[in-house]
Length: 407
Image (cartoon, rainbow, N blue to C red; front, top):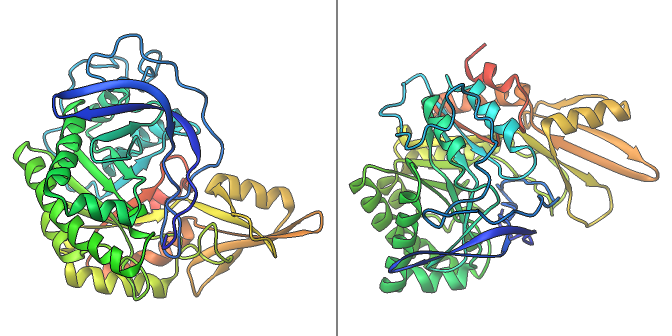
């Protein structure tokens, strides 16, 4: 995730968040950018979702048009005006992202099925493109999903990522007026639904520009996080910040100390050590976890830290520089079986992999499964990190949940 990948075009709803209020306009929107680079990233599918019909009646400017007909898994679903859960049981130590593409219903049901372990779900619904503009992805703000998760006792903390590069973000973050306008836009977004807070997943700023510019991003982002988190806390809302793993070569655009003071949770993306536009290899390794956990636990309170595991993998074509293909765990295993490829487990990295041929092309697939997660968990225990995350619901090996329970 030390380099920015090209965004994929998708259709979304654009919300212009102005100082006077929220005005909605329907326009083609950019998709959530792949969080990919040299160290950590959110792998996503390359296919576009179907076009989104405009909402019949937007009561607050954030309706997606997806509420109707959605089965939320409860007999008395929908629950207009549903309130956020008052408290989360201490036995719930997992958060997970809910993707807006592919089979959202399956991802949602995955969350309900594992509600006993989940304290928070972060739908990957929004993208900031300027200080005052937040783009909504298809299905964003679905009230039935929010109500259903709340009924299961799960907090809903939507994710906002950003498309602005290091230069643009540095200028925004160091301009008091524009920084304040961005804080205000995010607060309006949180208030638009029964959200329990917000998850900031700002990565483009951390993977573009010069080292000097990323240093400006680091100092500006810390100021911004202080202001946003303080105002969220005043409203009884959570402030979650997602970051790249900090090592000798990555994650330097994030001031872990300042972010750890401001935020309620700091989520570390523990994946894409090898990424879609790099060379084939494991998404994580035990040595890499050791390195970033050592730094993180020295700079952020352990009870605020969360390490997210991957539920996916990449399929690289040997000798080809094209972007690797994203595969969920289920897709990777189905592909392995269909090709008759042997399952291999790399003990050094703690990840599975296999090789297959398609015509003359040789493919290398590295992914993560429950066995690999089990190999990494002792490192979290060693450093006193109790909380885990998942990218993303519907992607993972079903045994992942048992491993986290210690079974």
